[in-house]
Each structure stands twice: as C-alpha cells, then as structure tokens.
Length: 418
Ligand code: NIG
Ligand code: FE
Image (tube, rainbow, N blue to C red; front, side):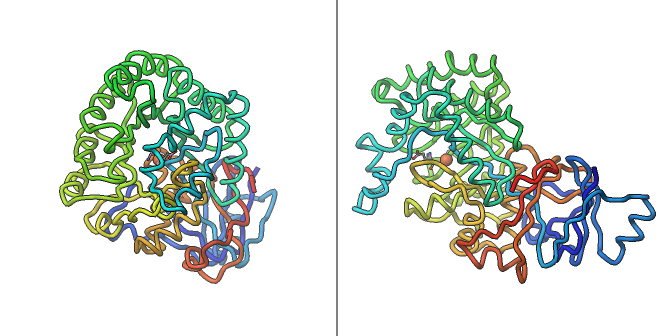
C-alpha cells in the first residue's frame, strides 16, 4: 500500500544519498525540503519531492496513493534514535530524589547502598512478567514523545540469574517487533555487595559464567562497563572489553561521568562504537577521540537531574568528533526518556545548534546502534520511521518551546503508532 503525505511545511534530513556520521560543519546541514510531499510504500520510504512536482511524479510513475495525509503546517523528520537507556528496571527511586533535594549527591547515595545496588535488590524480587510489563509501558510512553528506535542495557541484575533475566526480557521486547532495539550487556555496572572486597571473583563471574551464556542465547549486541572511581577501573574495563570481543560484542561504555581516568583512550583502542556520558573530559580525551570512529554520546538529561556538569558538546563538535544525544532513561540519574527534552537541553545548556541536536538525536543515535543504513534520515529505501509534528512556525521552534510535546504522529516501519 502506498500512502502520500502532502503539503508538508518541511521535511528535515531529506537525503537521497544518505550520509552516515557527520563531523564539524556537516553537523549543521539538515537538508530541509520546503512545501514537500513524501510517499511511503509498506514499511519503506518510497520518495519525496516538492509539491509543485507531485502530479507529474505520480503520472510518470503511474502511482495512485491509497491514502493521502495532509500535513499543512507540519514538519516531518526521522524518529529519534535513543542509543542509551536502562529502561528495564523494577522500581522507581523517588526517595533518592528527595535525598538529593536534602543535599546528598548521587555518589553519596550510592555509597550508602542506594543507587544501582538499590535497583538490583528490587530487580531480584521482580518476575520476568512484571519487568516486561513495566518496560513496555515505558516504551509506549517514549514513543509518544517521538522515540522510534532504542538501545536497552542490562546492569540491574548483577548476578548470573539477574543479568540473564534482564537480557531475556529485552529479547522479549525485541521479539515483539514494535521498534528497532539493540541490547547491551552491562553486568559491570557496579560491584554487588557480596563481591565488594573480591573484585576478581565478580569479573570472573562476568567473563566465565555470564558471557558464554549470553553469547549462546544471543542475548546481547554490545558490551558496556561503568568505568568510574568506586566502580570499574580502566584496567578492569579493558579486561572485560577483551572478553566481550571474543564473543563479537563491541564496546559501548559509560566513561567520564565524574572523572577523567583515561577510559576514553582505552575504549577507542578497543574500537568502541560509542563512549557515553563525557561530562568531564580532558584534552587527552579529546585527542584520543578525534582520530577515531567512536561516537561521543552525550546525556544532558542526566546532568540536569543529578546536577553535574553538562558535557562540553561545543568542544567535541569543534574538534571534529561525531556527537550523538541519548536519554539515559533510568530510575536513578535520569527518570525521563523524553528525547525532545534532551534536544532542548542540548541547545540550552550545551550550546548545540538546533540542527546539530537534530542530527545527534536521529542519524547519529542510529549510528551509535549501527542502524544508520536503515533509519535516521528520510531516504528512499530506508524504513519509514518518522515523526509528524504539530503545526509549528519553524524547525527551531521545537527545541525553543521546551516542555511541550510537539509530536503529532509517530510512524515506525510505515505503521502509525501515535
Ligand atoms: O548512566 N552511571 C551509571 N549508570 C546510570 C545510572 C544508573 C542508576 O543510577 O541506576 C547512568 O547514569
Ligand atoms: Fe547510563
């Protein structure tokens, strides 16, 4: 079936020859097409053009669309590709929110047994069904604000059973085929209490017990480690990345959230697909990233929520590094998966231009999940995964008018989801 979207105020990232990752000035080019039409056929984008050429096009190709959707005043652009989330979790942590209001830091809360360990305890008590149901609820929620592809991490299991349980739930979500999903193994998210004084034993459990099982059941696409003071050291991360590589798991790692420990250079050495967070970066970190294909994934929602510095997006982009934006949706450091808010924050607090933020949250998010060939731009042949906005005066209005849901419709594989 062919559907016509007509009278579109603007299509953004309308690219006949799709570009993958963009650097420097190319991150400002969003290829707008004004007063446009777009055709989709089944699950794919068929073509696009200017309204004045529509009837010629339809005649020439003998196309009679089954359905026409008039998009007067509205924009169309690729659905957000959220490449960093922890959206499978058992319980929210609003008590820690109050603790923070009362003056405790994220690190102090974790040190007294809150944080990730708190989530792990709750997860151990939850059934697969409960985890699946609450995660599906969150997925439905983030689709309403325009998310059309998502990465989900484990990391609240922190035991053989717990991690496998989380990854199997993610697999079940994947198999529902609602939206493209990638799964990341984050067994190295925190040392569980039992292994606090015996790190080698926990590393051994991750490497010898979990990884072979995960590989046998094909439960993960990527390997993550929270490399940070009081969590996993750079050496421990390296050991884990080497072990993951034996099973074909590419690194996507949590680094430089609170400290610059040299993790970026190590992750780059291991051909990390992305390094995520980067609130604290040194000139050595930038040097290491500059000459690599590794994507810098920034998470401004986390900076806002736990009140830590925002990543130096300008410095990174101006150094020619490919920057992606993601939500980090999780119960501790960012209980929101709203990518429109992420884009607004990137503009307001990290001085990214609206164009750069759009690219970072769509095609670069897709690239940070190795999906750039099928989603992330409006390109004939790619999946019809896109957003139709409410009528708006311009593209820049979207991040400017923050806190409003500008999404009118979300299409995934040609199907209207919202
Ligand atoms: O990306 N920093 C590590 N992990 C998460 C937070 C997890 C949690 O607090 O539950 C993050 O911010
Ligand atoms: Fe995270």
